[in-house]
Length: 254
Ligand code: BTN
Image (cartoon, rainbow, N blue to C red):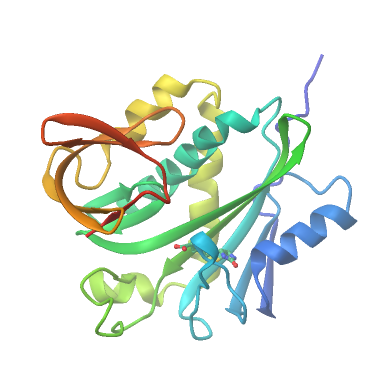
């Protein structure tokens, strides 16, 4: 009575020299090769049209960032639970970064910060089938070799080179494989339907949790205390002693 639903090859990594976006490339593979093994990963030395969150672009010079996308098929997974998958992926990246550097935190909803600055970003694109997520493309960008960032973002961006240069000299493939293996180990061991367990773990390493800080809401600046994420992915912030819930478009960190 074997079940093969969680069978994948641990090191199914395709390395490309140049691509538009590894997420787009993987989505195309998914629609052409059926079934594409779970955890098939694409890494690109250079992305010429890398995509970020909120329709932004993710720009980097060749070999400067780790550009990685991989496929997951979360079984029986409903669309309204998509934040669970986001939490699991962030936890996996946070754990991986923690093996290399201290002070790795998750910045809601899905950035990884080190010492209060962004080291990694995540872009998850789900392919739906009715009310379920049929497949998920998880895209991760890690700042590796940047020696400095443009003045407008240098107070909020960092790289392995800036934090600890020796980490940035490891081949990108090594980083890709160890990152993938950390995330896949979590994926095998945490039940994606166990929202409570995921929320507790996610909120326990959340950037700014419990610390008074400023947030921009509808063009105005507010002092608030971040409480944590809710199961639907909204962010709870205490403002003037009152709890308020925000989605991604409603609030930004100052
Ligand atoms: C963000 O911080 O806005 C998310 C950045 C995600 C970038 C990664 S790099 C690999 C994958 N391919 C893309 O086009 N984007 C993601």
